[in-house]
Image 1 (cartoon, one colour):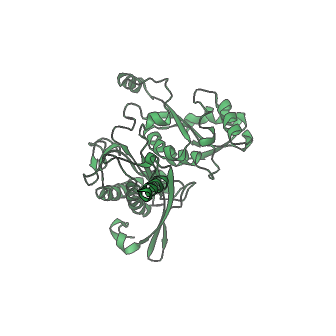
Image 2 (spheres, one colour):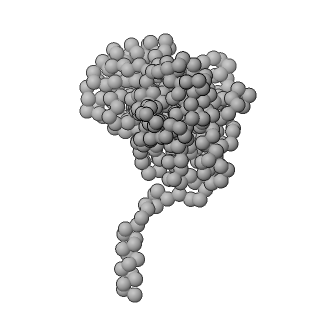
Image 3 (cartoon, helix red, strand yellow):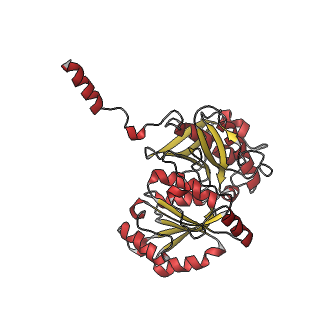
Length: 350
């Protein structure tokens, strides 16, 4: 009897899985992470054939086809809540489309087969194939307002910054948290005319700006991830992209704060009718309420986060990142794919 007690005690001490990481049968489990990487790899490979060819629609169409095809093999019952558009304007991966093999847990799915279609068409850095998954009903509904004002930074300053504060004050807080001078900070921002006043404020505060043409999902993750030389992302970008980024930031431990930014009186009224407070600052947890969500991305062009699709003799090389918020695990996955097995996604007449 004493031996049995000792064995039980030892088993309890050396448990194989922390209760905090356990999931129920109706929740997406850790195996989902690597299934999602296969999906973003396929989209990146398909879109990668169109890098530098100047046609963003053909690139996006190829990535959508590939992502949808692979999504149907994933073990979950997903509904696209952030997709390519409404059903009448997006024949595939439209909002409300069911994806997955129909078994397993019910999930919200956010897809962006190419975050940065223009970047892909022009061969510019930071284009990604992106996919985020969370428990059903946990993603913020972005349908009322397309744009939001954003502030993203890493874990060091996550509890200090506030979107309602002046830009200069937030920059000083970020600098203090990171043990830097303000003059050493790099602030990533979309290159848009609407950001001219913000750019002036950042520079007057003494910080540096780092412009991106498109792709603020990559920018938000770079601002949250150590070693990217990006300390913050600021400015107005897409609400759907903010929600996708929030899924990644849940794993990274940084923060995204957003405030809806309607572009017309009609959109403003639509937001009010939907019950939104336009003065409210939305936190990471407001954008994705679940603590069990997943993010996967594969580089299409080289960027701050990942290498783009490359070709070596008979191989296609990819680099991906996959995150799971429940465990806080972040994996960088280098893939080698036999080129002849991906010929169905290759560009015609190449």
